[in-house]
Image (cartoon, rainbow, N blue to C red; front, side, top):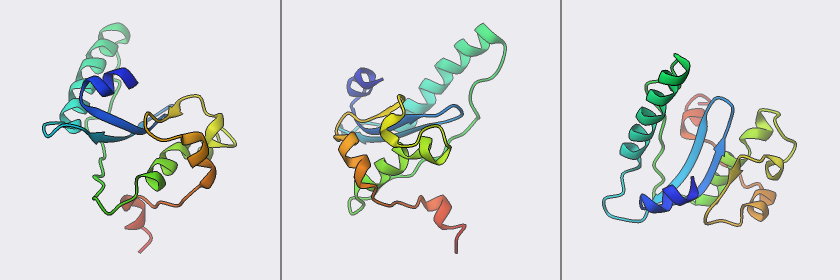
Length: 127
């Protein structure tokens, strides 16, 4: 996953592969870096192969994205992503979960700081 991300022109700040969803925090390195297009292509390719091999559908039709603005700090968002297995009781600490990581942040240290982030879709429900 890391090599493909670099090849496609992205830095992978955080990722977490959960049993029923995936989180990515990426940064486009090129002017024409288009993660939405890459995500659609990847979903299409893997869905086709999965359907051919297993006769079932793999992905939902859409996905949720949130674009960070320059003023937003990356690390709280990354921590939110790494903390998913803890919230879902798959691990006691983010560092224990084998399917999380980062290409750019020393995430084992950063995850210990535990800085807060509330995703926009959760913030709007708490109003």
